[in-house]
Amino acid sequence: MQSAVVDNLPLSKLPHDRRTFDEFTPFWEAYNDEAESYDKELIKEWASDLDALLIFAGLFAGVNTAFIIESHKNLSEDSGDINSLVLKNILH
Image (cartoon, rainbow, N blue to C red):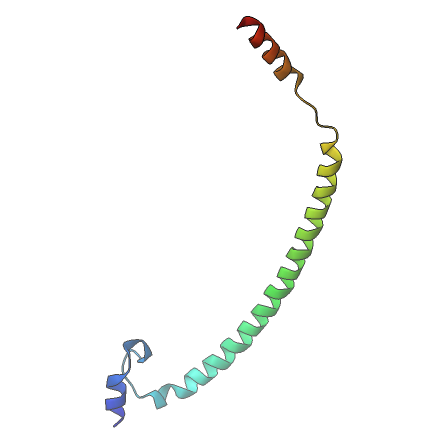
């Protein structure tokens, strides 16, 4: 009966040497428990890192906006461009 069930499973679900699944159950239960605790810890670390990055990005954008607004007032045309345009109009 069990070999009929195993024969009908997709290959990705089968162990490589086709032993019965009952032989692998303790291993996979232990593996899943360990993997779950590792993944939860990793997600906590990523969440705290992401929070710090988002705060930094927000502060960086705010500071840059303030500097851009203030420096925008000091922008003026390049006098060399104006001189080039006048000379070009005189020569043509």
